[in-house]
Image 1 (cartoon, rainbow, N blue to C red):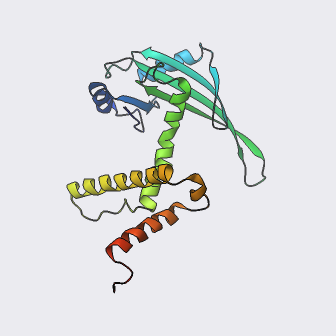
Image 2: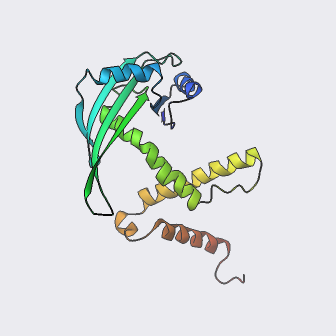
Image 3: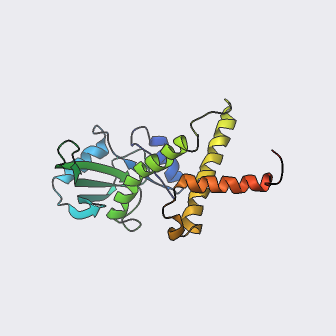
Length: 208
């Protein structure tokens, strides 16, 4: 079991919780003032990176396990860096512009559990969760609307929304063949399911 919080800052309680409950964490390491960041940065200049790739990006990867300079966490941690180079087509003149991004993560996952390429993919999934998960939940599932201003009701509604979202996507991915899904949007399938549910409640022969 592993967790993917968004930032390293103010994650002491979360990281302690993970270590106490046998869960793993993968966190973006951003704060340059922290001892862990400074120690890892000092190693980057003295260790040759490993070449790799993420999607269409060419990468240089550094991987430093068993670091002990995060004293609030009771286990050694691992720092992974991915320096990524890619091209972006400019809209104005249609020319390719060379871009570079620098990602650093800290994790409790060992090299034996997850090699560096898996860590890089997991780290980038944080944006997939935001772009494809929360964005869709807000725009298509109306999960940003509070129907009842009560903490228990809000928590219950969000949990039901998450459950419905996951069941819907698992159903499309596992039960509907790719050739059948092709050319049809998620809205199409949602409306088809809704129509089926309504037909069971109110058959066509019944008056509205």
